[in-house]
Structure formats: structure tokens, C-alpha cells
Image (cartoon, rainbow, N blue to C red):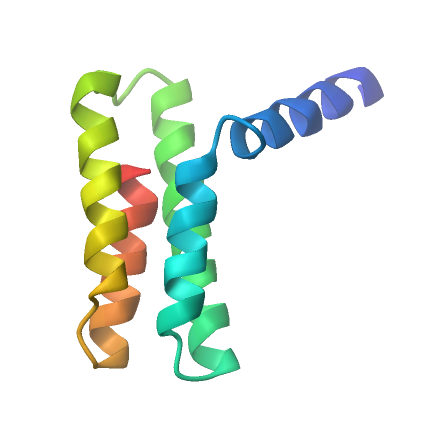
Length: 102
């Protein structure tokens, strides 16, 4: 059981570093646009929950999208977050969408 846990932790780190630069850029973009710590935590949590659900669906085989489609969408989502609208609601919506795509 511990071996499985350690394997998943290692896989999670590899998913982010070095393979997940897009995740880091998305979170940095959220950080740069956050108006407060509460806003930052809400957006980062929304992104993480949405991304976790998407990974679960992909792991179960319920969702399968080719990387050639997903990667440009991820880049676009980072660009959108950098130029995000002013409202908190819109930022959370972008974080949710980014987490689902990413």
C-alpha cells in the first residue's frame, strides 16, 4: 500500500515538474491577477478541483482528448487568464475552465 502511495506521489510530481510547465504558468497567471489572498486561494483551489476531476475521468476512460487538441487550448487558457476580466466571478470561472482543460 505504501509503495502504491509513493508511486502516485512520484507520478504527481512528474506531472507538474518537469512535465507540467503549463500548470505552473496557469497558477502564476492566476497569482498575478489575484486581487487578494482569498481570491488567489479560491482560484487555485477551483483549478485544482477541476483538474483532479478531469484526471479522474481520463483515468476511468470516460474522457479522451488527443494532446494535439488539448495543448493549444491550454496555451490559450493561460493567455486568457493573463488578460482576465476584472470581476472575481469571471476569474473563478476561468480557473474552473482551465482546470478542466489542463
